[in-house]
Image (cartoon, rainbow over all chains, first blue to last red; front, side, top):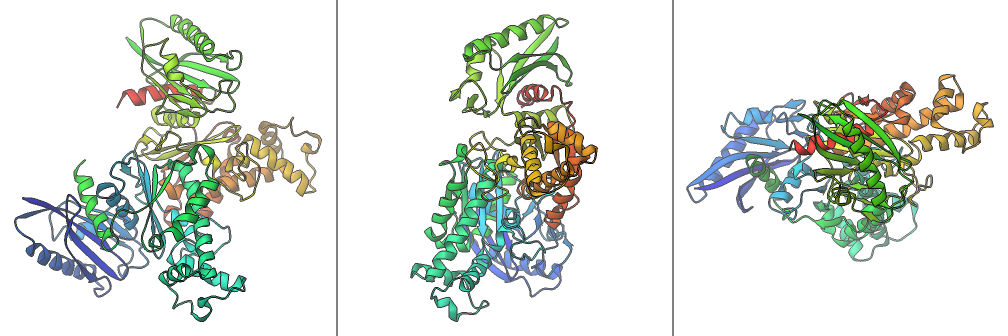
Length: 319
Length: 319
């Protein structure tokens, strides 16, 4: 009987799910709204319904062995989503306990960046690595650490939040109320802010002089850079500088074999990889120079987060 | 038969050794010069001789089960000391291979901060902890990370070098050729430099206006602060600010239950603990606030490094 795991990625707008086999083939997937159901029980019931439909559509027989969930502020130890500002369900949501009413199976929860790291380890480019880091570059900056072949959850389940290291004292405002966090510079929204800073600081012509802040997207910045827009190119240089400098500090902590860049901004290719590598090497302590690989994620982007969540099942049940 | 492990701490000036039982009792210890023998083979022969003498002086029978060595730039994976600038023996020294000519026993090597972390885990205040960090505050700043109950050596054996995170871009010169490293501010030599910066910047009266840089010690700064010397007090405030801010970034990486401060500067007690805790909490991301303990090491200082090195034997042989 074919064993399958269900992966679920809960985002602020959409929740994606997929049914994945042990080799990392996503057999079927789908999406529901994260915002239509104000009540978490209604949301989970809808999720169960679409998953059951998908299971029925698979060549039989299959055996579902577990569920993995990636969610913002997902706590691995407790199975709870805690104070996720971009989700409907506030305070502490015991999502594993609630979803196990529908499926009496092993379930595992972690945040999206940790899920990406597990996905890279189980299906992706880190299959043979014991020490690596995944950086997710989306609206914010997430990170998942693997040390001695195990994900680092830390004492409380919240390890790997390097989007919040301070890169500029009294720098840009962050939604957390702090200032100068890495993700206020290095993320889709960070690079937008850098574009607007450069529109203010420089006198270069740029197509962005006719675009509002709210209309600007990271994709537009990447496209403009490829066409030679000076401000867009400078924004990637600045973004890579902040990321490379921050990673040179991060390497001092866990000395990884590789750092994978994952998600939206990472798809800009050399525009972000080249300055990141250059500034990383420039700032690394000598014993770490020319050792740490900066790699693109090996997971395809469309359902990478779902893959990561499903990988959590294979990883945990193999222990 | 009583089982014992030998712990060896190789420093720039002295090499200490001790014979330690599983409960962490140091039964006998001693010291030889690290600089008298230009040849590593002569040094190891002398070390073997004094260890054998000590063994003979113990109540018999005892069984020596292994040797643990803590040394600057000690590589756990390779058993080599690599490019240690403060030791006589240059380049790469295969110290485990050489010392096993004298004792055909399991031998383990790591750097002094990692040895301190193992010591804290095996004999000290971290006995029941799975995720913690030890910061050693000596001439420099070392760090040892424990994650999921295991020491973090990283891909290459050199993880845990947070003395070299950059806290001031283009800041103080560091012996590595880089600038603004944490340890140029937070260490025995770092606080000396801060005193001299304050002598330049302020107009406060201070006993240090009659002391040369080379005569000044961290102990004198601690003593002066206790007597109310304004410049000494301000130097501890600045040192604690740099350390607390840096640790708030470090917590984001591995989310430890506790951070132990170990060694010279940590012996200044509240003078260093109070500002460190205050600036840590002020800078922590909300989800980590009021969770991370800042603790003094539980190992007695006189032979703590030797204890840590011996603990490496018990830890590795228990696997």
